Length: 315
Image 1 (cartoon, one colour):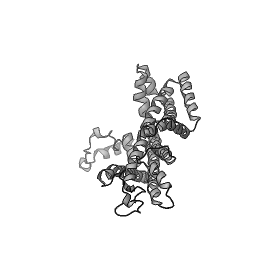
Image 2 (spheres, one colour):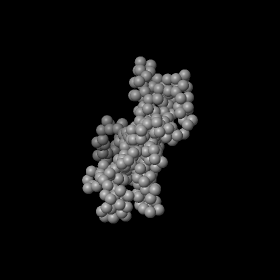
Image 3 (cartoon, helix red, strand yellow):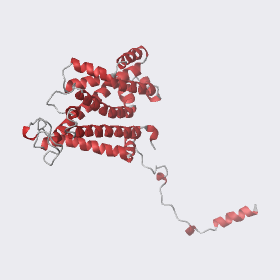
Image 4 (cartoon, helix red, strand yellow):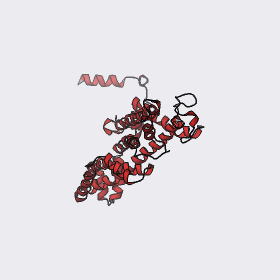
């Protein structure tokens, strides 16, 4: 007892000037020192750290820019014939050479990029729109509606997609519109199945059930809860759909079911160049290289988007 009293007296005798007052406010004690990071800003940060995905995105931006600018500023047009300079090798005048009608292949390649990229982008948007609507309805309502809608998808998927595309092209006249319709007619099935699976998982969440209890309608729940939370796999799937559509258009043009002459696309250029591969190989090499680079870049960028948008990889 005596020791405790002695210690207490010693503490009371300590001069106050030995202490310094902490000027920090108690209001700052509960503040979070690390700034909050939103889902999209964190996804962008992880996408930037993926060097291959970033490089692929830069290359795609460059390809799109050249497709827009080159046909506008070049002194040649994609359908301008000049029989005095047919089948010329690449030179400073004609960077990619000329074809058997004297047309500048450099301009035709970038005009073809416009057509092929436009087809890929439009098909991807159509696949996403139809697939989201179809899969959302099937997944949200379930039951008999889901069984009937999924059996219809399986019936279409039982026949290879390219066979459907070829049959539709033979029925319709060749052109950009028919090719887009033919590719998108069956391309939405994968998106529908993907979004249906996402809806099955998300619709049982507590916030969706609370919204339904408060009287929210089906369209509101799908657009405000189901669609935003399933957006990351949708974006990834649409990114992968673009190179698939470009390849389908190139294949159709290569076998003679593509765009009519004198329309230029990468598939048309590859088809023309394949007939002269032994004599003038450059006429096939340039469009083929552009097709390969574009498809590779879209696939690498799609992989980067899939990793960046995956919430399980968020730090």
